Length: 270
Image (cartoon, rainbow, N blue to C red):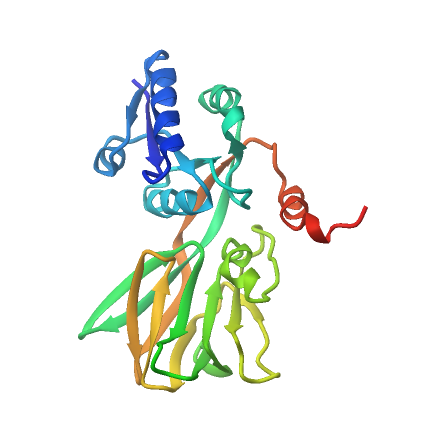
């Protein structure tokens, strides 16, 4: 018997209602539907369906990546860059997916490692690692070393280390460039830089980054919005290409170019 998992944004009543419809649709076709992660991770599901917006899809894809579970994103929020289909397209999309009429897009992820209390902790991120000054500090300076060599420092309110997926999130609002999801690169974007020479920088995903404070006693570090720590002076965050990738189901309906046009339509000139 085939199995599918649902990743539901519990804060959206529409997502819960749609989950009931989808569950019935699959059960009518003799599929087993799981909605709890402990079941999804243990039962060998064929794929995940995320019901929410881009944030919901990010959670599902990040959790599914170590198990190589592909994710179909259903958009129930505002137009995003990641979700493949809208709510009114769900039945047609499900027919295609169960008949394997889709492709899988692999998205770069990062591994971020820090020493905490003498122990090493690694986090996998799909969007970004965010460094932010705390409220008691007027400015911090973050140094970025590339593969062991000092390369760039940012006197700023913070720094974003983003994947191509993350380039259309926080980094975009901070003035960073949009990167195609097919590019194997990492983007460094300063937040409210205090120097005209502090510019976004794109580096190869093969680089090994070390980020640390050269001014300030501590800063907040946020990993994809799901975990955060305080980085203290003398500590380093090591960032490199992750050994796993997020897997997104694509039905060929929304190209990256089309999504960019739709998202930035206020700047599009016919």
